[in-house]
Image 1: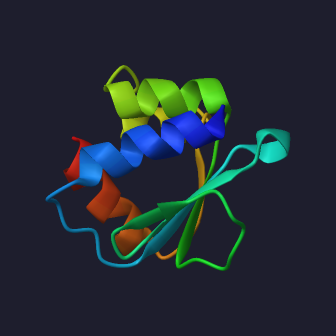
Image 2: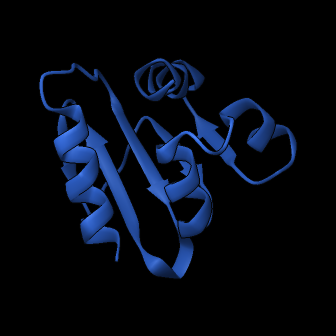
Length: 93
């Protein structure tokens, strides 16, 4: 399931620039890593980690979940470099 989401992210990033590395950690479902424009589902260290459910990740990427509201409600937990998380917000916002 995360492979398809990773492919969709890769397609969505085509022609856009994302500096830094960010991990979507979906627990037992796995991870999606954005690393300086590339997208993978292989675990690796990143500048910033967003912990959320796979369902909330889908909603976030579709624009159906406001990132700031989700953080305040505890649906997304952020650790690491907040600047990288803010770049993601601009990219998908």
